[in-house]
Image 1: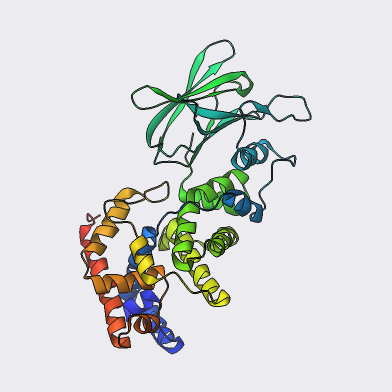
Image 2: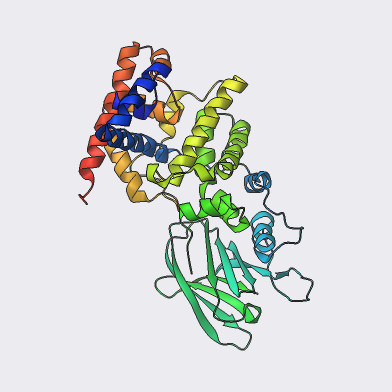
Length: 195
Length: 185
């Protein structure tokens, strides 16, 4: 009976009777919950299949996420633009106060292939990296190169594989960043973005 | 510095945070679409259902209860249920059961991603491999296709009692296997 309830394959009357019992029996409640959790875990075996192109933008459109053109706080404009439009290096989105931020740039591997995007903004100074290269996996260290040539570590993260989004607050002015470098666990630079 | 957990992304999605919405869609789109197309067979319909699953997750994010399971299984259950509804509404002939079962990854080739660790998948897949084929098939069709015992009986051409027994036995064995694998807390 516990199994049937966990599988939810009962008639109305059967379910009512089962739930009545559960109300009084803690042991059965635990068992049913446990069995249901195991049954649900099978969903994790569902195949992963690349959806048709444009899926992201269609889904985000239904979720009412801001599209690229409308003016909104940096997050909506920059992230939505990068995600939906495939940002070209160095695109600057102007704001009313004439600031050059937020700005987006493309992340590229050493062979020049696109690996994702970075988005820089201020107030507060921060950077979002969107990694799309399928080979991403493991631990990475990120540094930024500023206009005066200084190099600053901004943090580390571990990725299980792309796609992966990572946001970090910057210890420097976002407007001063000229290059972003991502190094793997061996210290080798894997992807860079030029701002 | 932070990496969004599944629950944090869902909370962000519910709050209308555009960052979270983008990350949420990117994190789950392959699994959600993959399940939908494995049930429906029709790619265009699966695309529509997968999008609807994202919308439903957004609308019902407040109903998610972390004590009852992971965000991934919750979202995939939504996807499965919408797919079955679409099957009935569109009167579309579903993907064959054999195709569904064949599409499942084998133990050696598990699609881990940001939402589900390879280790977790391995444990479930290994436990499943240990179950006799008829029972395994019955349980997979029940969970991944949402088949009732009655539907399974009809599709497989077996008595209702046999269908029920196969599903129940499979789940009980899987449960026992997974629970004995876990270290005691």
